[in-house]
Length: 184
Image (cartoon, rainbow, N blue to C red):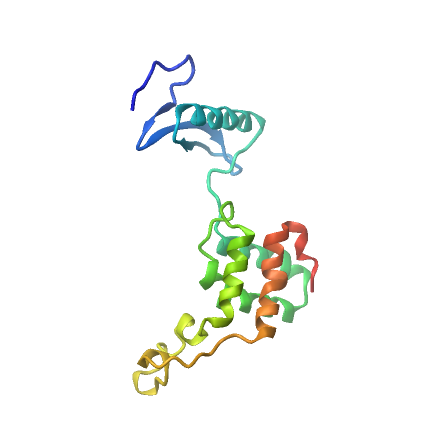
C-alpha cells in the first residue's frame, strides 16, 4: 500500500489490513464518547464514509453498535407486544421467537439482514427436523433417547400453520419496520 500525506484534519484515516480505516469520536445515545470506525478498500472510499460519519456526529448521537435480530426481537417482545397485546398473544410470539427464529437466523445483525435471508430461511424451515435443530432428543436421559440423538432422524418438521404463524407478525414486523407490529 502506498500512502500519501494526509490532508489537514485527516489524521484519523490510515492504512489498515487490505485497505484503509478511519475513526471519528462520536456521542453515543447513552451519552458516552466513543470512537466509531469505518473501513474500505480505497482511501477515497474511506474518506467519503469518514465525511458522512463526521456529519452524523455533528447532527447528534450516533449508535456505535448494531443489534442482532435476537436482541431486537427480545426488546420488541418486552416493549411492544407484552404491554399492548393479550397475554396469550405474547406467549405465542415468545414461543415462535425462542424455538424457531432465534435458533434459525437470530445471530444476524439487523443492518445486514435482508428479505432474501428471511425468505431463504422460511423456505428451508419445512425441511428442518425440529427435534434435530432444537436438540429435543439430546436433552432426554440417555436410555430414553428415541431418534435424532441415536442417529435416526424422526423428521419432526413444523406444520404449515406453524410456519404461517412464524412468518407473521414476528418476522413481518422486522421486514416492515416498527409500524409492522399491527397484527394481533
